[in-house]
Image (tube, rainbow, N blue to C red; front, top):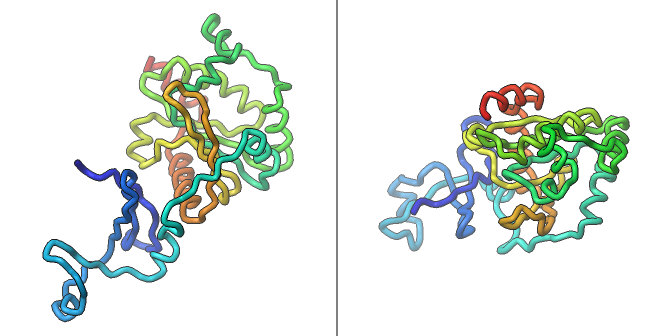
Amino acid sequence: MARELRFTGTDSKVDGCPALHTDVRTGEIIVQGAPVTDPGDVAQLQHLGPNEAAVAVPRELLVNWGPKEMERVPDIVDRDTFRRLFHTFKHTAWRLETRRGYASDRQDPDFRAFLATGSAPCDPDEPWFVNVRAQTAAGKTVGRVRIADKPPTTEQLFLLDYARHNAAAGEDIRYLWREDAGQAGLPAEDFWIFDSRLVALLHFDDQDNLLTVELITEPAEVVRYAVARDAAMHHAALYGQFAAQAASAT
């Protein structure tokens, strides 16, 4: 069975080599670099087996992108700590939404109204909207890219209709088809990234309930999520443009 590899990082400014990848299932690190083939060099290598290969990479690659711990211990925070991040960030708060639905949305009275009428109402004085207006008025940016299936699920259609309320409060709401997200190399993870320095990784159960929030501050990991953010923003369409595409896909 093929490995499930996740790109970790590279110091290359040109072609992306040398680089590191991580085997998601085993945690092994795959090192990509120039092969060591000179017989004089190979003769100096100790314990090199007949089916093994050696590659040469700059020391900086391992220093900058190699894992800093044998095992990463998740930093799980409570909901109050998570909520405070939306009040204390300095510049940007951005989310990638990847699930086909969220239990919290299905429990929302606005969702039931959407099912009944096809239009989602909202209270502009909800704490979320009040805070977004305050943060964006202070010159900060709040945004997200949502991944949608083709055709979109009912929950995704609800959020697409609701996006006008988010946009009215100051959020930058964009969309990307799931197949395009896969081609862009976006992860399946659902996360917020704050100020390009802290990631809040959201863990859900099979019923789409949010279980835990894990904070990630290791620089190489944060950069990985920032790369995903940049790719998502590059490929995604503004919600209004996407709504027209979604209408023809349903």
